[in-house]
Length: 503
Image 1 (cartoon, rainbow, N blue to C red):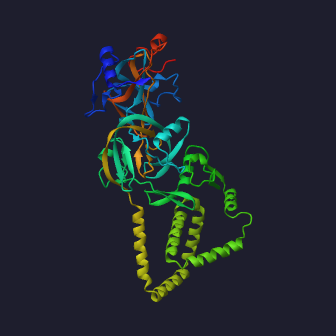
Image 2: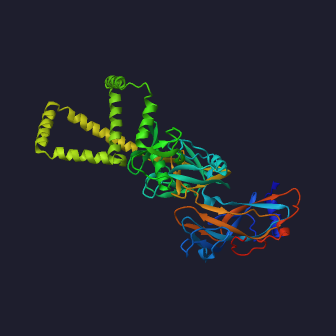
Image 3: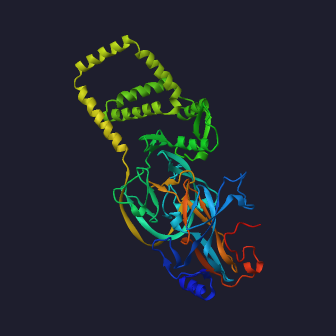
């Protein structure tokens, strides 16, 4: 089978009404493009829709074999709003008549998908960063992927990245970041800015501050920088939250999170389980110390090492920074709540003693009299700490945007939980939430194309009637088929309007 070019499509449309009505060329200005392209035809969506709503009667399950017509609301208009995580049925504006030796393949338009070039790498919580093209191939074999998203209140969390897929070909922009990373995307693809707003790539300007994805490793565990509060948070805890949120297991007190394969950087939710805390401590001790471990020898070695390292000012500063991090975790994380409450109660009892308070005042006054130079040192440390905190709050900056010549293969994916995901380049982008589904146009078939438009985002989605919705590619066989759709007298032959599935 060979893919047919524009002059063949034009001839078949004008002489045999293969596409009716037919627009010779691409209509672009102010609309989602439609019409004849180099190797295909961009069809439009008509203004007739059937919108699914779940709030009807006792409807509990959507059965594709028996669609409950009560759940489908008819709508006629220029703009159809599809509710979050819902879908609508529509039809093409064009009536198609397929020749006996031609098969039509329909692809959704990248304008609704918002796409990236196939070599764009996605940040996954399992420690890898495959390209979108690779993810699309692996998804066909049933593989699942989890990445990073920003929630409605600015917190980064783990989400399922669904349906990575090929969309078609489109023109792209080159977005260059301050890190030197380059991202190739359609002009309308939206980026998440540092202030929480979304902006299309074509509307970004140099020095635009984008929402960052920063990751560090501490004690072998990946830590994710939370832009909301400036703290680092363990990725495996975020993966554990995904499991609890989706009922994989419960948030049971007295349990620890554990990596099934022992790889601390593989934070895919399927690699996380909960184990009894005592059992987990034994497992870790066995890994770290072994059967021949001598606690006295180990303690002496630690003391000797600390004494040696303490003579290095840089080490002391690093050690102090680590201790500060541990203190922050102790005072902010839920795992330490009981110990924290007991410690606070003990402190309250201690410091309510007037005798203790007076003794402390005397000790402080004496110290400052004997060490006046420490006042300036401590002040300088406060300035340095503030500078470090300010550096940690930096944003990912945009440097330049360029137009990329030609058309390119583009891919996208969907994030139903959040509507955005992180690229390996270290920025968050909007997901491709509008999915258009079609069946192939079989040889001998004629009628209006039924279009299923799914909104997989948590926000309402607009569909523009009388504008482009999909591209049809035409493949001509070397010889006519033995039995065409017309010969089979298929049930969708000559279909008019928006047609529901039939048995």
